[in-house]
Amino acid sequence: MRSKLRSITRRTAWLLLLLTVGGPHPVCAADTSSPIGVWKTFDDKTGNARAIVRIYADHGRLFGRIESTFTPGGEHRVCLPCKDERKDQPIVGLVIIRDMRKDGTDYDDGDILDPESGSVYRCKMHLAADGTRLVLRGYIGVPWLGRTQTWERQG
Image 1 (spheres, one colour):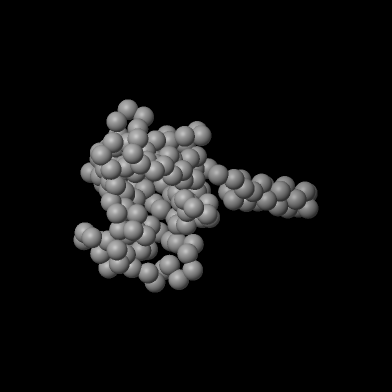
Image 2 (image 1 turned 90 degrees about the vertical axis):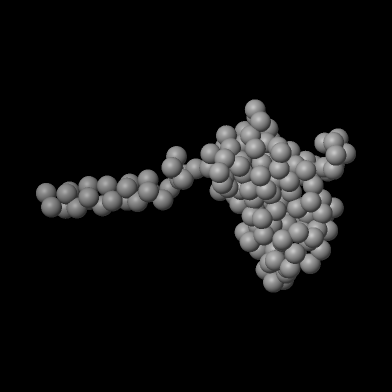
């Protein structure tokens, strides 16, 4: 009887362990209906992974901060070409998306910084591919005079 009880207890323990670490939980899964979360960015020219950006909400607006970089030595770089308060600030931790506001299924009215050039562009963005991709368009003046990037959701 004890042997059978131990066997059931072990099986139950293994089952609980598998359920605990075995897969994504709804509480931990990313909300794919919102851009809030962690995104991988890519270089426009090479297509290589460039950085990890966390998009977060603050007072009803969305912002994006660089959390890490794939560029060798990038964790020690600062934004030399930046012209605003971000000049000489470390790239890791730099807020590159500011003041994005929800407008239907899109987000706009904010701006995005290219830390390589220091240029700041107006920005529009929207979710695509069931919320696993974020399409961003940086532009000057009108949206059709700009550049588009697609980021991939992480985690």
